[in-house]
Length: 165
Ligand SMILES: Cc1cc2nc3c(=O)[nH]c(=O)nc-3n(C[C@H](O)[C@H](O)[C@H](O)COP(=O)(O)O)c2cc1C
Image (tube, rainbow, N blue to C red):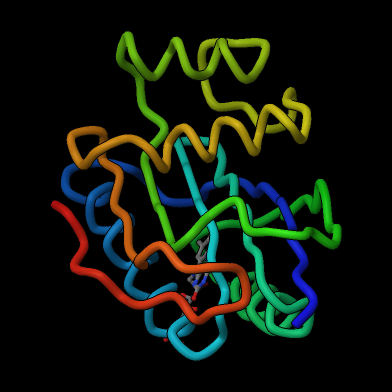
């Protein structure tokens, strides 16, 4: 299987009040797990009040299939494709969905991988975006981050794992 990776961002249309943030993390991760069990797609998605930023990797035809589906999702609009390229190996072993809020640790991450202390994909370069998404994937659940998928070699279907709260 030849492996590709895409990176895109879009504008968040969801009003993130009350429990909606945790619900959105849970819903999107559940959708990723449902669809990706058979598709071999892996990736990472972070969002804040303004943006969604996502990397998705797997077979190009599977990525396209999923892109059409999520482009129609009314929780976001104005998708901007930043990168689509063949890769030798995956950057992400399963799925991670996380809220890009603010804390001392998170603000330090934004400044490490981009020009400002917030998530603003329109101002970021591709290596910084991949670095930030990977750094989020290493965070634990105390940061509104949820993971799924066991470590697996490139091309092997990721196994679902119980999400952390
Ligand atoms: C910004 C954004 C990114 C999403 N990314 C994915 C994704 O990578 N994989 C996925 O299965 N669903 C993703 N979703 C959810 C899909 O848009 C859609 O709700 C889901 O595929 C529907 O799944 P269902 O047909 O099983 O109900 C995303 C939603 C948003 C708003």
